[in-house]
Length: 328
Image (cartoon, rainbow, N blue to C red; front, side):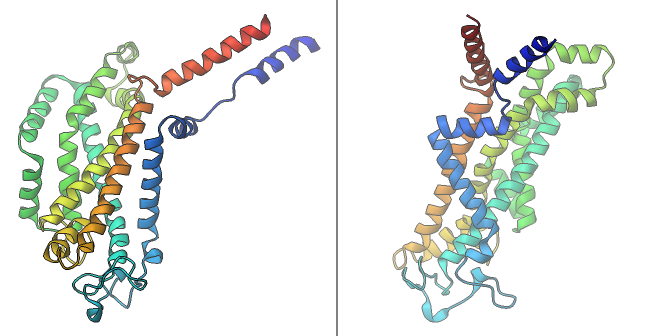
């Protein structure tokens, strides 16, 4: 009796330890994707800079004036120095403080606008794929008509109609990107819809809402995460483009795009640092987010070689060979 119970215990001890999906993803990211790891580090630094901008910015708030809008008229267009590490602009405002607070704005715009994108595209796209029929046909024709217009023209038109502002900018970027991503989300939902377990669930009387939330959505979630990650960089770039044109965040918001346009272009010969530093910050942020998104796409998409599914198969194959060797 003792030998019978001991055998499963030893077998269980030799089984590979269960690894959490996110832990496995991080280990593979560090091991196989060096550019993705660099992107993750940049994204984490950007997020922490935005969260703790009040503490990291050299210029602190004075009364009702935030730190990024403190004027030092006597120090106008001061080059980088010990007092002002990145120099000052034409109003004597510290450029480093404005870039740090600009990181907070960029993260808010990127995350919130992309969240709206993902909710709209996945909600309408997956519903359209599952329901099909005339509803699917109507949705796809609306999307086809929407994507015929250049994205920048649509954004400029909408912002000119409703006016500049943070809430207006988030809604415009969120709705425009959400409608543009419906087709991709529909393709994901349509691929899952054709599986046998979906047909079996419908055959036993499961409602379409249950099919969407319990079968389709969990299976497309990895690709939605990739879509979300890559959309953050696009929304940050779109906000910078609109602010550069004067249709994004109004002054005195320290948007990187408006810093390049307003202060940078007007003083590009006298004070080149006014355009260089926000341009560098924008470049690093977009680079980091895109590299992280590409790495997550390679690791999470099961259709690409090296996805988590193939990793688990390789892991179990190693365990099977090791177990057969021990038995031999």
